[in-house]
Image (cartoon, rainbow, N blue to C red; front, side, top):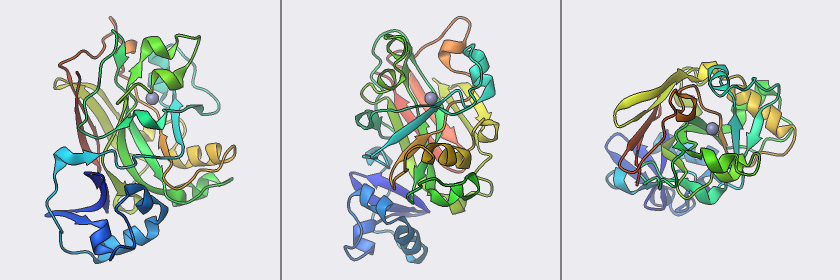
Length: 275
Ligand code: ZN
C-alpha cells in the first residue's frame, strides 16, 4: 500500500489514480495525512478493500507524506564507507540528531541553496506506526508503518559552525524532502536490503544498499526506544551511504540550477530542483 499527501489530503495511491482517504472511509479518516498515521492499521485494512480511484494522481501536488511528525530522528555515520569518507570511526551507538520538523518538504519541492557548502544525503526513512517504548530489535519492524525516501540535505558550514550543531545545519528551509509516498512494510520482500542512490544533473553520486547499514531499522527502533518512546507518525532518517559531496576530492556541493534526483528500490523517486 502506498500512502501519499496530495494537496494536503491523505490518499491511497492506486495504479490508476488515488483514493481519497476521507472519501473512502466515509469521513472516519482524514483528510489530514497525520491522522492516517495515528490509525495506520485501519488505513492498511481499508486500502485492501479499495479498488477504485476517486481522482487522478497529481505528482506535482504531492507534499511531504509525513508533514508534521512529533519527533524526527536522524542517524549519522550509519554506513561504514560513509564514516570512512568523512574520516570518522563507526560509532558504537547510533549517532543521533534531529531535523527540525519545519524543514521537511515534499518530493518535488525546491531546495534553496544557501552558501557554498550545501550537500546531498540520500536516506531511507522509516515511519513509526505503533508506539515503541523499550522495544527489542526482534520486534522493531512491527512498530514501523512503512518506508519512504528522504534527503538529509546539509549545510556543511552551519553543521560545524558552533563546534557541532548537526540539527540546525540540516534544518534549513526545505532541507528535508520526503516522499513521494510511504510504502507499507508488507510490500517489501526484504525491507532490510534495498538499493538506494541519488544523482546530481543525471550523474549518479550515491549508489548503495540499505543492507550496508551499521544499525538496521529494527536495531534503531530498539536503541532509540530504550531512551525515549517513539510515537506514531515519528520518522527516522536512517543515515546516508558513501558518496556525499564533502567526502570527494575536490569537494563538490549543490548549486542553484542543479536537479537532485533520489531513489530507493520498491519506493520510487524524488526530483528536487535547486534554486
Ligand atoms: Zn544524514
